[in-house]
Image: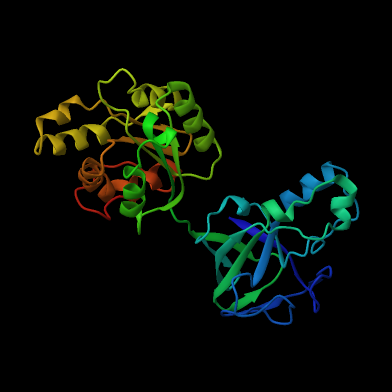
Length: 313
C-alpha cells in the first residue's frame, strides 16, 4: 500500500499545479477547482515521487509536487505499471486508470534541463468512480488490477505473410472478460527469437500471461516448447497435461502435442495449439483456472487443494 504525498491543482491549463491541504473528488468529474476536471477520461493525473527522484538524479532542479502538472503525487506504489482498468482507492475516493502517459507537445523547463520528462512515460490518468476527500498522508490502495496478456503466434508462413493467422485473434476473443490482451505478435519458428520474446515480455512486468500458438508438434520446425523451456524458471506441467487429457477425448492425435507451460518471474507462459478449433478446446480447460493461476503467480493467493471455489484464502 502506498500513500498520498501531495494534492495539487491549477486554475488554468498549462500552468504548474500548486499543493493544497485537501481536495474533494467528484464522481465523473475530477478534483473540484482544477482546470483539467470534467466529464472526460483524463480527469486526474498521478505521478509517483519515485519517478520524480529519477529526474533529480538526472540533474533536474527546482522540483516540487505539482511541478510535472500531476494532481496527486504518490509514494510506495508502482503506479506506472498498472494496466488500464485498474482501480485505486485514494483516501475516500475510488478511481479507475484510463490512460498511461501522455505525449508532451511543449517541452517544459525540466525537459530542457535534462533532455527528457518523466510524466509522458510514468504518469497515469484516472477517472473518478466514487467521490470522496483526499489529502496528504491518505493511503493509496490497489483494489483491482485486471489480468494482462500477450499472444505469440509461432508460424513461418504467418510471419512471411503467406498465410493469415486465425489462432491469435481466436485467443484474444476467448480471453475477453478474462484478460486484457495487450498485443498479438507473429514470429517465425525460430527457437532463439521465440525465447527472446518470452523473456523480454515477461521481464517487462506488464504482462501476467503469455499464450503461444503453434509449433508444438513433431515437425522439424516445431520448436515452441524448447523456446518456452529456455525462458521459464519453473514448470507448470498440470496445465498441458489437463489440456491433452481433454483433447484425447476428441482425437488420439492429442498425444502428439509437446506443449509445455511454466512461470518466469510473475508471468505464466502456456503453449497452445496452432488451429482455432484446437485452441478453443484447450481454452475450455484452461479458462476456469486462469484467474486463480494468475493470482497465485502474483502472490495474491496461495496454491491449495480446495474442493470448492472460495475455500482458498
